[in-house]
Length: 204
Length: 123
Image (cartoon, rainbow over all chains, first blue to last red; front, side):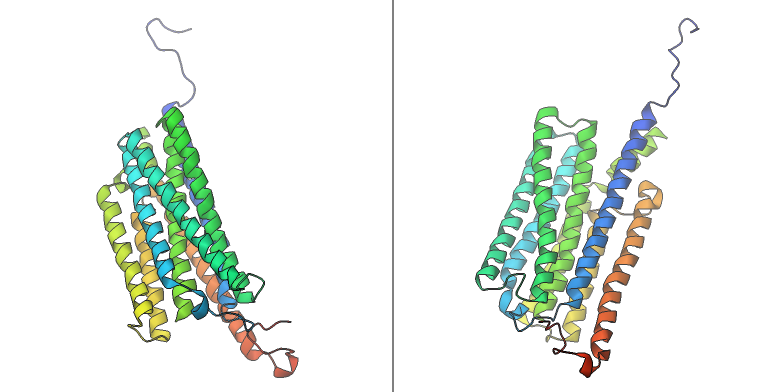
């Protein structure tokens, strides 16, 4: 039925569909992050209610090493910047720079988790375990859930490094990296709440 | 349409080095100040110091939301911002409401009904 010289008829939208699909993915991932924020809200609320239920156990003054928390906060903040630099490199189409900044981000995230585990081990060695008091249960639940998120973020970074190495900056990896970046920055926002309300308010 | 959707998706205008560096410097200051206040005792521990820490936290959350998460009224036709504001409202209700209710439950608990002193000393 085609007239000579005309292109084959196309009955579906080719260009926009991919873009709309991606926009849906980004919005969907954002909704996930917001629901994750509500999960954290309930844990923050629990912690707030139990923040003085020490049951005769150790109090924040005896437990926290604010210097270590400051170092961890700095590590996470710098990792947010390197994550942003990875995004800028991605938009510039530089695979090498994207992988390098992403690797730095992952290493900083791993360092954050390592320092946090060190802190948890030191607390446990002093007998400050989750079962010691309601306060410590809430503390380990809140800080541990954030740490678990960062751990999965580090795994995601590692997966993306492999994907970028094998397939480069194609369309799908572009979208995945955008989601990863949103996830990583979201965790940094949650950490603001943790260091302010758990650590700093704890010793005030 | 296609180009427009593409730009919206990539949010390319938000991904500049300048935006990230501005956000980073602001966040570094907004983090360092509360740590300094608490660790040196520059503001005497109490209500004023707590309010200061909360104010710095809220300021930094807003800075990171704008510069790192690129939330604005244009992204995704405003749905990102709408979901964010809705979440913030629920978050405040959940946290402030829980603490408020449980605080007053503690206050209004009749002494005779308590087997253990208040503040969570459950057997």
